[in-house]
Image (cartoon, rainbow, N blue to C red; front, side, top):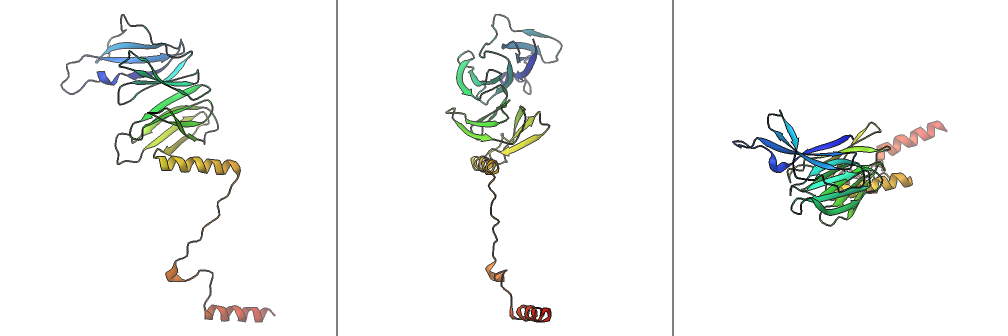
Length: 229
């Protein structure tokens, strides 16, 4: 069956001066299983971890794997669900998010506390990581969304974005701060309803009203009007 995504177990990353010679790799596929492999760090051999069964958390193909800062594993599946598999509980399902209709990608923004999912329904959905509540639905793609990545999530001071890729041959991005997400949702709603925003004219009081004319301009206007008569 097809292998659809890979993710390295972050607890096995080699560090400076480390004597570890192997990393653990998670793989997901169209047979719905998530499997674990050990790979030596010089990439000359790999083997499936013995005495450990494949993880079966979904009903059908698993398309995306993503570890969070707690080292738990987030998964996205064609069964329409995003799930969090708890490391402490032996990869048992801890959280389930019902995105709907073929979820192709999942990403985690630790700074904002968001989980982001996307798939066949063309929407990018932003969930509260702690409560599992759907907070924002971001519109823009007009075909299936196949990939997500969070940019800038490692720092509180940097702007954070969710970047999406779709079969519509576009990349799109949204700021991940709640204020900006709310604005994006309202803008999409207005566009869908055909609402046009009125242009706001800002008047600088120090320069007078831009629609008023002075005496010289009025005199010139009167002369032009008289000439036209």
